[in-house]
Length: 303
Image (cartoon, rainbow, N blue to C red; front, side, top):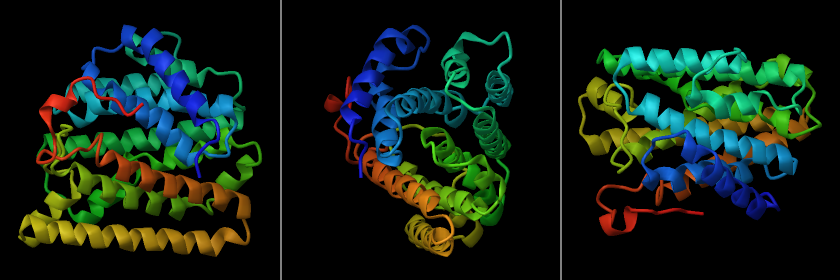
């Protein structure tokens, strides 16, 4: 299922980049299509029943958030700079009076008038969990620290931010009371959803043209190191783990569906939409080095 007004969401994100983001970011323009698709297409896949204005707002937030994640986290081994970005992001989420220009789009999302206090608190809590996990994994990478697969996955579950994406269901939908979140019934959904998508992205980023500095904070590299095996064997194990965690997630959906039918319906859309977007990104955002045609890269866009 796709949001019925996806074309409107796509048009909005194009105008947003042209009129606002180009004036803030120095990111290479070849990547803008990728980030815009992270906003417009992904949001349309995962929130097909969300109110239009709120999904447009989330789309804007996602596209710029993805750009920050790429530029300041995944492609950096400067721990001081990573920590500075981490602190700036947290300050913006907490609506500090003075922020750097880089975080203006984040502040705009957080200061929208259509939030309730309870829902914004849920969002902030999950964003902080994401940021803390990012910092842990980047520290592992910078320090070239060897960790177990289990420890890595415990961070990757939230570094991939599926918990944030699930939590924004409380924002995009009007029939999700905050009390559901605080029941802690959905904690395993947040965890298993994050691990399964994290493993899928690890598989897709392994040889992608999109640069990511992740030799120690990457499931396939960790499996190779721990089990002293070839890359292909590690990839096979990574695939098996993805299916295992995806199966665990489906079990949680089935266990809770009778009690929380509406919430589980929304969460199913998020998971299936995330897998769909990841698969489509295999040909765009995570295009493989062996597949790429350099003559087609410049100025590419999926929108």
